[in-house]
Length: 155
Image (cartoon, rainbow, N blue to C red; front, side, top):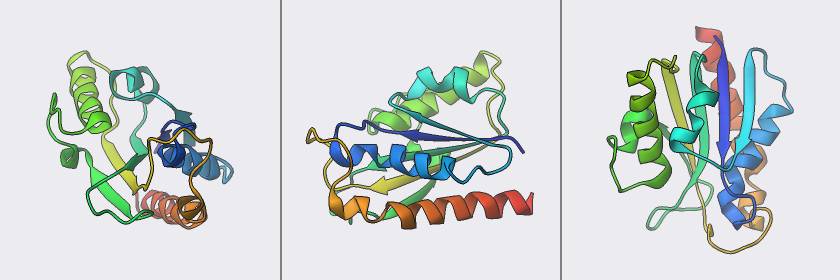
């Protein structure tokens, strides 16, 4: 199974870069048949990159009311809303992109998982995550990489 892991974020907006950091750590593990990308784009701009893979794993940040930084939300595409749903930026963009890609004949991954990491600050200009979240990156990396490896073994 050919898998693509995409870490999404902005490396100069404090915790918003957590997806990039985790993806970078997963890349170091050199998982077989797994490609890793770290990007600062989303939605339709991802189509050309994700086409042709069997599985897509998105790692991004999320900020919910009352959320605890470092909480890992495991989501499916259906959890992100419907195409054009204005309630979530990356999510609606991803759902819309997937639907558009299918209608245009792109080879869209059959399996799509989203890992959203709860963040504390995604608006302050600062390179790197805040210390609280930075300290959790190894544990979050282990959990996500472990899930991916386990899923690959059951296929």
